[in-house]
Image (cartoon, rainbow, N blue to C red):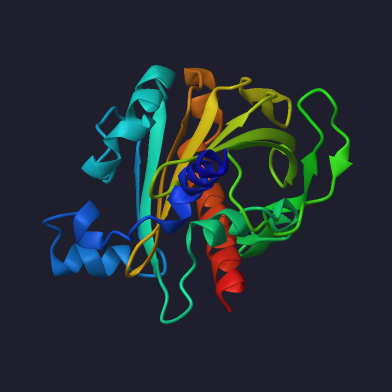
Length: 259
């Protein structure tokens, strides 16, 4: 019985103690210019309103199902991003990565550069966890954990400067090397009097992995919208702004945990 319990602990802890991979392991053949861009503060972000294959999804991640999920959703556009956040010392492990995304409330007040207002604008005027998709009672963010959970689902409400109260579900799972964070809307998204994205028609897939050089953050996002909505709202631009804000939230969480 004791031996079984020890094996169980080792199996559950495997993602935390697995050998770190390098950037070259995941992205073989990238030249110095591409590497410099990916390691830059903004990384690479590619937007397309036409159908294309995912250009930056590492072949080593093909088994985690991101590409298949994107194809199933038939999005009207895609926003793909890749960045490696370097760390000189105290790089976060997978547990640190998980804890870095636990503070939903820290999304509140994060800003983006507004072209129309010529200033920095708070994208999310409020941010809170919710009890469930049916019980929309705000709940506090938990503190950091010491052991990775088997998986988790988080519900949240973000008061968006453009879309008003927006409701999202985040499903978190683990691979032997990294963390998968799948975000979707569990209620319609609206702009003024228009319903712009129906329930479950927006998605953002994030993959995070500690590497020997830093932390990889890969993401792909999109939405299935009507031609009418596409003419009223520049959704690729709107999603790009939100991805940049969320990426900044992840980076700050990682650096806070490593300091």
